[in-house]
Image (cartoon, rainbow, N blue to C red; front, side, top):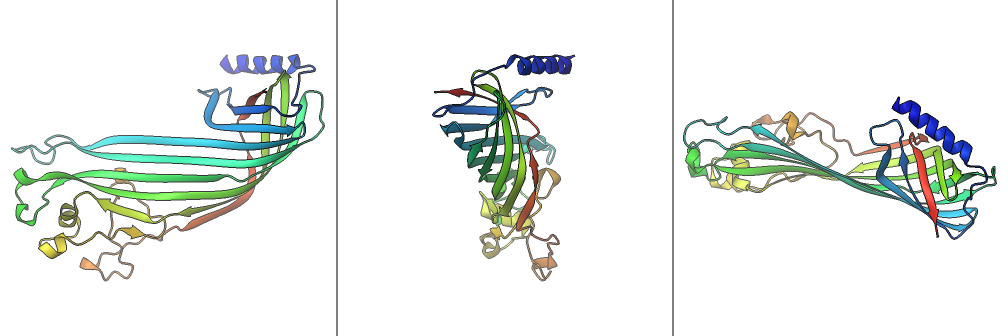
Length: 285
């Protein structure tokens, strides 16, 4: 029933828009995505601004922001040690954030009274960051091994940045169903290259880290630095139990530890683009 009502509403809007006023130059324009059949019909995660320099030329820029933080308990109170001292709850926190900007230029052509077709070029740039932090409970002094009453909660963090750069050649059209208000679509050809920054491993307690992961039972080993960065994308997910692995590509490291995964450095794509959502926007002086 909701889909039928949206369809009827859209049909009514389109048929109402006889002689609706299009852009004439010097207007500003704000636009969001319109997905009438989804749970959230208006999507404001990406906002596009246009400035019509003339009735047939426009500067455009899109801005997108995304951020999420999830926390999970992977050990409950007392699950590691029930006797006094009772072990604490240990958490895993996963964070992801990204910000993107896409400046561009549009050239509009004559269409019907209510229709404004155009060609466009844009250059999208997106910066993303992924971070997993896992809590552990254990000694942070070599003399405290096996003494739970001296154990502390410490953290291990795995972080990586991702950058995407692209160039899009687009065709679109705006249909004005009321003065200064339109629905539109956009499609085209896009090139994009994604590069993965160094994959960084850090801890807030170096001795506790080395005792847990590197069998550090001497002062020298316990104070040694972590192997802090790897080149390329490593598969890691604290929720799946993968947050740290020493990397010895020849298998000749301590205890012959071998890291078997190849490191993804970049990805390049070229192909068709189609924005599945409708675009809805309005003009203002």
